[in-house]
Length: 436
Image 1 (cartoon, one colour):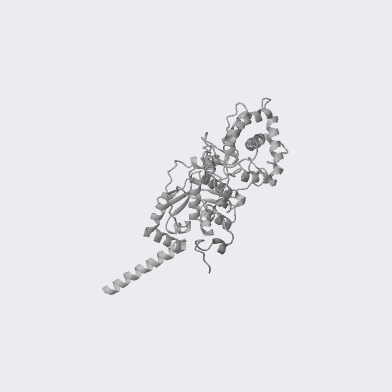
Image 2 (cartoon, helix red, strand yellow; image 1 turned 90 degrees about the vertical axis):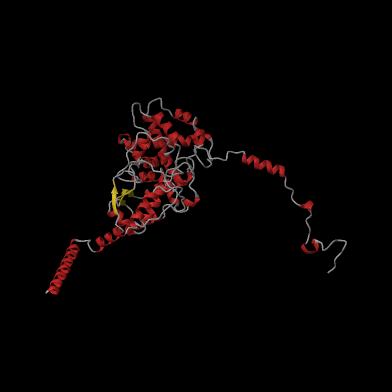
């Protein structure tokens, strides 16, 4: 191979084709790039404290799309383009019209729109994701959706307010849609808007608060033994947040969660180890206790909306920086306790779970409830540790095994007693024979 000393070696063009010299390279404008990054860093990179309405993280949504998507009613800006929501817009307008016609002359649509426009920016700041509507359309959404919810809650509490042709209370499916759609984390409007519209349209002298009306509407969503409605819930952010506060605050003294996690046996195995299962008297499903070998769990209603409400509460806790993991901890505990349909039968026969679903469906629901959710602090860690220590003792397990296998019926007890008596008599007879 020819090699020119003058050229200093083989040229790149000889091997790789056309050359690209230094002059042909793309020049990076360092000053411009630095300025661009500095401009990006100058933006507000911290989530504002007022943000409380979040998009469901994709990692959670993929497990059950229908649990996070409204069926018929869009509340707020994020689902308004869904074609399935269009048919119910007339219902919302009918409710707004009824509210205005029933109210005093001082309550006007113009007044509601004007006053709501004054809090439009504050309401917009409550959403974590972008809102692709202008100020005018956003105010329209807040007024129509907000007044619809207020009128709905008032009519549910007082049936005298319902017209003969009411499109919701005359159709059972509509209420079922609403019990699903109004508890979705993406389908909310800020509480400050609801409270504002409620105060503007309130009847003089009526002491009932908006929180009381809303909780009355959802009173049987968790149990037929609902928690008491407290006079005041501080810091309400939206309907879903109100329902969460209702559960947490009614569960008694809130204990600090602990980092870590400790698995426990299923409820069937716990009962086999000597632990007794009893329906707790507390009206909050979160108030689970283990005392003197007895596990007390408040009653829970499992219906079609149970998975929806718990999944959305978990999503809310996972997204909201200042939310504790109370509902997520509850889901983790139940997943540990319920692994098979036999476990579910144990709960239903104990009167703890009122199951309206197929046993297999209910069992699978608990096993998949908190997948891909992160637990910062576990609020039942101490309870799990106490149950595990109890199970490690030998006597409770052997005693329970004896009771379940050999003393489960009166005839079994009589047989054991007769056999023991016969054995004693045989030993006595043998002793006397030896003595003689």
